[in-house]
Image 1 (cartoon, rainbow, N blue to C red):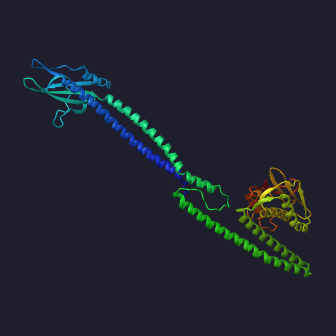
Image 2 (cartoon, rainbow, N blue to C red):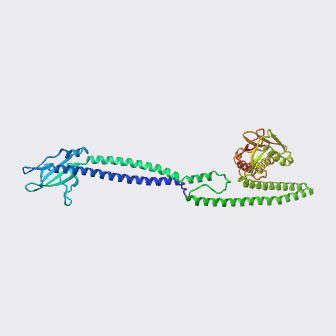
Image 3 (tube, one colour):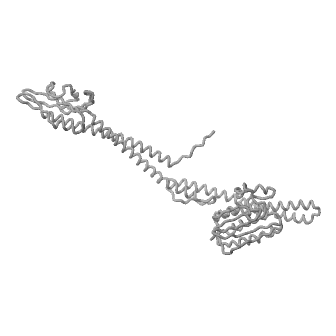
Amino acid sequence: MTVARAPSSIRRRLVVQLALVAALLSVVFFLALRVVAERATEATQDNILAASATSIADAVYTDAGVVRVEIPYSALSMLGTVSEDRVFYHVILDGETLTGYEDLPVPEARGAGRDPRFATYLYRGDTVRAVVVQRALNVDRPHRVDVVVAQTRRGLAAISSRITTTATAIGVVFFLAATALSTFAAQNALAPLSRLTEAVRRRGPRDLRPVTAETPTELTPLVGGLNGFIARLRSALTRSEDLIVEAAHRVRTPLATVRTQAEMVHLQMEKPENRAALRQMIRAVDESSRSAGQLLDHAMVTLRSDQLETEEIDPVELLRDAVDRLSPTADLKDIVITLDLSTTELRVQGDTILLQNAVRNMLDNAIKYSPADTEITVRLVPGVLCRLEVSDQGRGFLAEDVARMPERFSRGSNVEDVVGSGLGLTIVRDVAEAHGGSLEITPNMEGPGACVTLVLPCS
């Protein structure tokens, strides 16, 4: 069983990828800032320790051949101003304690020279940072003085914690700003694709013109492929419509010949059963010819809907022309067509041929499905919209059939005994939509039957 995958979004993928990059950069930035800041803080502490030890070493002096030292206040106070850490010192003369904490270890020597040496170790339960500074003192003989100064690292830990908090806040702000900018960049980068999508979406179902929207270079192959597909589709539809038109034309001509011959034979027949059979054949030929004509009309409507030849049309003349053309057909069933034209000032903009086809199909349907000795009312209703109504006293439409009646080859379930193509209302709907109007199917408010209305914008 194949599981359908949810459609992916280029915008979402782009934003997620940019956000991941921003997150990686934020982590790198956080780590780099923390390392650099901690090293700078530790270097500052080392410099202060070295300055304190040097100050104490410089305070070593001799008095009557005796080596003495007076610890300068500034030597220890400079460490006290940095934090609340504890400070330890140890002054050693030739390996013997001169003053200070005797158990304070001396950092191990790393190479020769008198440069300060630093070490970190555990002393009296605390981690301390220590420095040793050497001095040579000549009295009666050379002496070696080692000055060790150590400081606990609680202040450094507090500073490191503050640095971590600051770096984290900066990293989060950087990530959020980068994500917002990534979303904006993705939106801006995909804007041409959105415009192209909107340009194609706004088109009608029969608009097969090439896409001419301005697009970036990266979308040029896509637009070229889309236009190529549209051209092939338009060519295929044109061939199909031409085939329908040709087939309908070729069917109608021999059908007319068959009908003529049948009528001639019908006049010569004397037996009632033979005449009845011929009448049924003539009726079937008429229905076939009518279906072929509607196929031809539908193909013509489809072709002309893309490029309407609009002009100002008088709807009164449109209705009168349709009534004049179909009155002979109505007379054969003793059907009376009544024109209700309360206004002659309305005008519509439209394609004359298409609107004639629509009105003719509305009236033809009414005649076809109306019983003999009934009345059909053709009405023009004025208003904001121009409403062309055809009401009959026939079988009407079942409520469950109304929604699908305008679909191609759809017919009401209550007229299955009547031969038809199911294209009449489809033609009316297509013409209405091509003119920005609509088709309405309602019951006849004045009695049994149906009312079909072509609604068009007034000019």
